[in-house]
Image 1 (cartoon, rainbow, N blue to C red):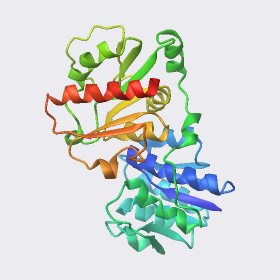
Image 2 (image 1 turned 120 degrees about the vertical axis):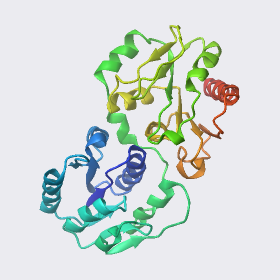
Image 3 (image 1 turned 180 degrees about the vertical axis):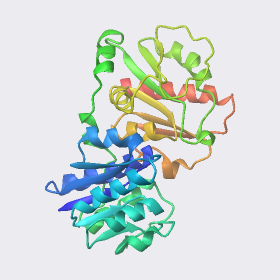
Length: 314
């Protein structure tokens, strides 16, 4: 069986799609998968080796790279095409693919449904992974999924392997991710959380990770490393893989952490954690808090993080 997955973005959505395809390949090990992914996230699909061929969508590349992508997709013949995105661009990619079975979401938008021969059931306002589980039924698979992506264990980082083996030898790691794709999803008090948390964790280091290099209050401690702006997506996956605890907003790294089976603490402000939290929500190593973005929440977040670390040690 040969399947094309059209799931270009965003990072969290790609991780959700990988959860489904990883389960599909576990149940149907002979299945071959190709994937269409946006250039900014392509390396996580490539290096995980979850797909045989990876077609790269250049988000800001203009019309000619898009036509080249369409031509590459059209060369292959597929048993199924899964449009897991459900937007105009993914609909076009699905339409040009050679297949008699083009499967899309019942909640697809922007006329993308015109490309489909079949839509999967929309189970309502449930977790994003529970929506995508419906694609498994199309190929006769069980819809039971663990939420874990074993293929992410393939990803390594030569730079940070050395860092862990020298600077952080015999130390546990907490990864903090203060950013999200949309600013309104960000809890604003990570800079206050760090000095509050440090006294609780004498044999643990905190890694602050992300792209934006905002100014922080002076934090001088051998337990703290500000690595924002110097890590690739592969470095992020590798560091999460080695973390004892990950604390993040509703963001791609939150879902990477859950997919790597790491203890995951999600901080939510404007989005619903029941739909976008670490999957599965009720897993004992997952914790979520719905917050109001007030300073007095720093104490609560600190206490919950410490309780999670204590539970992990036991």
